[in-house]
Image 1 (cartoon, rainbow, N blue to C red):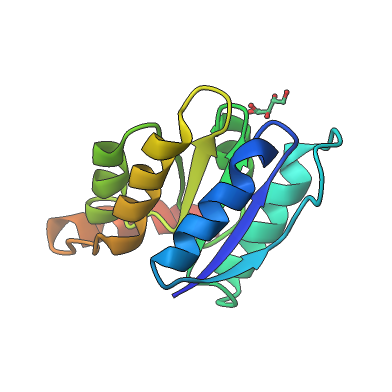
Image 2: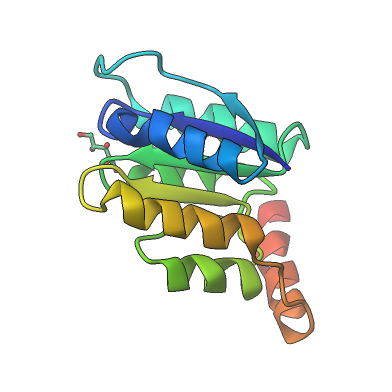
Length: 146
Ligand code: RB5
């Protein structure tokens, strides 16, 4: 699976750790930056990852900022993206099973790297359940056309 990853300065402290973990799961990772902890604006990085996923260059996206919230708000504006800010493995599993989320946004400041690993594992390995959830996800995606 191809995974696009980026952070801002507040998520940078966990970016390399999460990339290494993704590689250990067998993912092919593209790092969209930044290259250091210098202050940056999270929308610029959310946009790069969201567009990689929306265009099909990547299958999934992983974004890290202080809370995960700003990344999710921005990425979700890109048509085709279903971005979620997730703090627990169970929510990651449900975001895949029920919402077919394609970008997960992690907190680098409030969630430990070990927990974020579990979040990423659930996000990468859980399939969309389809069925009644497919109808609902289709309705979400219709919002992109309005
Ligand atoms: C940066 O200070 C912080 O606002 C950002 O990383 C993120 O948490 C925004 O949602």
